[in-house]
Image (cartoon, rainbow, N blue to C red):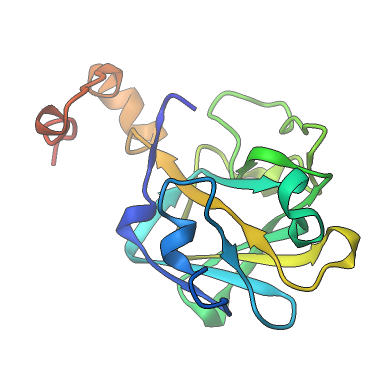
Length: 196
């Protein structure tokens, strides 16, 4: 997705359980050799809480069935809301022996009326994604590992990335098309990429 940016660093991350030395730090360290390993009953939960309501368009998970076998997730639920108390399930995906980055779209791209395409290793149960376009807005995103391959109990997830749209919204695109068309490459220039 060219028009997206990784927003996971803006959030506070927590896990339902973790083995010592296999926690949030390993889930977010940009190293696919390390992993989070759960330590408790299913479902295993990854909670991502943002300080303000953000636009989220896609989640990407790195898993390796070849290495992790029964620890590899086979069914994942994505829920959004403002806190633990009002979460709504917006997507459920079935994974078939995934190896590498798995993309879980939470909204269809603007102007794309077709359903989300499934890959051989990631099959969304709702290809229409509930009708969401471009992004969903949430303070809180929860990823629930509902089951693992070969009926495994604990799970391994090697990396997670959270993506939101780079442009503020479809309505601002129509008002200021040239502002969203800019591709500012350095952090110094990116601070001037939006108009307040």
